[in-house]
Length: 239
Image (cartoon, rainbow, N blue to C red):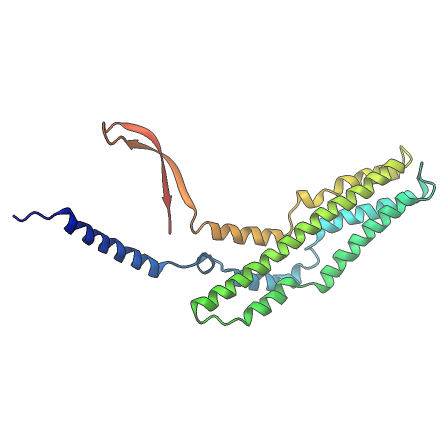
C-alpha cells in the first residue's frame, strides 16, 4: 500500500477548510440584519405607539418639576433667611421651566415618527441598502436615548439644587418645609424610574447582543492523559 505523506494531506485539509470557511462566509450576515425585530421595524412600531403615549412619555421629568414648582409657590410666605425671596423664585423658575420644556416636547416632538419617515425613504433591495437602512434606524433610536440621558441629569441637578436652596431658607416646622423635602426626594425620580426612549434603545441593543453572545457553562471534562473527570468551563460561540 502506498503511504500518503504529510505534504499530500495538508493541502487537502487546507482546501477543505477553505471550502468550509467560504460556505460560512456566504451564510454570514450582519447583526443589524439578523436581529429580531430589526431596528427599522422597531422604529416603525414605536412611531405607531408615539401618538398614544406622548402624554406619558416624560412623566419621570414632569413629576419632579411639578413638585419643585409647588414648593416654590408655597415658599412665598414661609421664608426665614431670604428677604429677597430668591429661594421661592428658584423653585418657580426651575419647576416651571421644566414643565414648559417637557410640555413642548410632548406637543411638538415626535422623534420616532420623523425618523421612521426618513428611514422609510431609504431603498432596501440590496444588502448594502438594507444595512444602511438599519444603521440609520439604530442611530435614530440611540439618539433619543442619549438626549434623555442629558435631560435626566440636568433635571436631577437643577431640581435638587433648587430644593436644597429652598430648604436652606424656609421656616422650620411649616408646610413649606415639608414640600421642600418632598421636592428634593422627587428630584431623583429620573434616576429611579426608566423612560421609554431609554428602554427602547436598551432592549434593541440587548436583542442585537444575543445573536453573537458567547455561551459559557460549568461542566465536568475528561483529562486527556488520565481520562479522569475534572471540573472545567465550556465556552461556545453561536453563529
